[in-house]
Length: 300
Length: 333
Image (cartoon, rainbow over all chains, first blue to last red; front, side, top):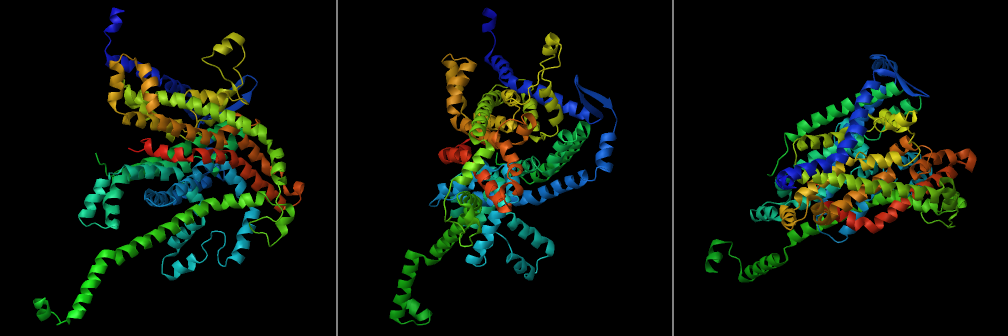
């Protein structure tokens, strides 16, 4: 008893710290680290299920050779997934910053607008998006209302395209922009969490900075670029990383990995696919974090 | 008065006083500033309304489709408001989805996992925020790493792990068989949530850590001085102050579990859960079974509406808390 009393608070805190973290640590070891290593192991083996569980047969690099040189779809799907990410992440970041600056202002009906804009965070779901892709009746409604209301046609950018082309923009930029307008629903629905993060950041900027700038004669435009943007730049990094991870969470490639494991029972090939996928994601994350964090401004 | 007359363009007195009035009027009413302000208000209103419309549009179309009778589908004059209101579609799709059972199961699963995740992530978050020990910085780095690893990378071993579930080989030692099959039950979800390895749990630990770090240290010290131990301080002092953080994590984990179809298909592919039943719906209402592609679309739209309905109702009640709590959680920084 006497010895126990001599334990300093610092030490006691450390012991409790270990205790508090233990559930997570157990989970990490059992459900993350071991499967992680096993998955690497499986990717070099041929795995067969049998009555006794499963057995492994070492095949070397054959699984990797299979996905790169035999499978006709893997590389193409991976390219697609990366291309979609590269196209979408800037749009999502820009859109969510823009919407957050709008929503941070005070106006009537702000609560209602916020409630509606965060609706996609709640309702976004892979299954629903899949069911929605062949939505025949909704398209019919779209075309019907086009006849009634003139040139409105189910959220398309038909007029924008010739306008931009005649203004002398290059074809690539025009198709990027009009593509963004056509996919506005997907972009809005995948930027909910990012808007929340930006909004929280905008509201944590001290108003005295803006007051000082206003007294010095800065316009709203200047104070956005000189105050808001630098103060929020760490969150741009957070949001870019979040958007990248989110875009890789569920796409045609993850579907492919899942199919090759549970559809064709090619567990080894599936593990090899997911490892390449993981390496590609880590590479993209490292590069983008490095590039952005050089430009980020930290207030303290 | 004199000097201005001589130096300027020799304005008559009447014109000078008119100019002064105009300047005074300009000062008081400031039309340019006002025009700028109102122009911005108009632009902002248009933008916000536009964004809201884009979000609400698909939900409204679905509502309109779900409530219309079959004969309205081929009536060109029916665009938004159905002429023959009916609940028949909803009834039919509810049967296909086994709706009451699916909703109850999904609700149980979501509540169970979100509570378990709350406990394990709050503990870990507090441990990382305030109870520093050697190597805790490194371990927190690993937490961030777990966010980055896509679940597909560890999919196959995780599946096998729950297919032949066994803690340190103890079960196999006593019974001789190769572990318990935990698939087709809620156990895989509950175990991974209880050990803070469920859906996006790294993010929740991160949120809790940021939140606990933003609480003042005096709170804890006061509790220690009053003789509370570390667990007592955590439960009685820190947790009540972390209500916004708890609300955020609870709502996010509930909603993401509800919407998840990946883990459901992996761990419980034959269980009656809402995500899985929705996945099966296109097969059940194929055009050749229900009489044409527009009937299929009718049922699919109704199905989607039914799928989002429970969470939509929850959101109607919780949205104020949801939006406000995230702003105060210290998700930032």
